[in-house]
Image (cartoon, rainbow, N blue to C red):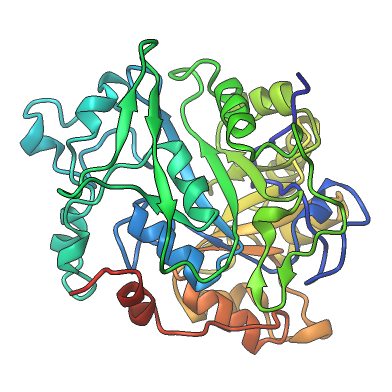
Length: 392
């Protein structure tokens, strides 16, 4: 079995083209179009992060990619969660008192199934709270891909998800057509965590992608000319650039290279040191050299108050090295303006090549207003949530 390269710095996408609907003509970088909108954890603003509500909203809003974080349960189920524990976003302290600080890897999937991943959001965000968010599930890896395909989790009459377990101990999850699906088909941006705690995680991801029909290196490979957009719908999930992998871990990056080679979009994520002199030549040169060694096509940098995460000098170096840059995590139009600059259309020269955003709605409309994206959003975030069935 051929292994693809998913390099950290910022997940590199599989298929795609440099601009809008242009077909891929160059290397793996061209599998992702410029000015891509990556929905960070689905959204952390309009719905509970990394839940079905967040990803259905991101899909229907028109995100090019939906970003997720992967952990693994005690019984080897790939779990979607950002933190190392369930404490911040679930009711683990009430369901399993004394275990709230325990790692995700210490819980079985049957235990995880009992957690409420929505009510904490409602308490912390009264302005965005919705009664229907209460009881949102902790998701498994497959869920996000099926949502990207236009489906939703199949549920029993009491609202619990339909899941079975076979004699080998493997769980089987069921899905159904989403009646509110509006036809957008985003790609998936996969971020891995703690490689030492999850040995062979990258191999497991590779095999799961193959099983689900999402591995661009296995099975029926999309045509190189498949466009990023079809009419006014996102089509990234049907292109060769439908998968991008990323990690902060240098060991994780090397693992991606071992498993995927250099044929898949990969990104090396970096955070800023606690200093105002981040972009020194010594630091940035070493980061770029490591990214190239790993086969990464992107470097992911966090935003800062004075462009300290992606300075003009650092962006120029990244591009001169034949790499691209994404910036995370965008929350406001002011942040978008800072990193995009003054230009628009063909005269635009933004520092990043894409934005990882908690506000997909704002970012799509920002790019549309700067004439680098053909279509803006069609409805307000609240209208989309209502259409998806998340009532107040």
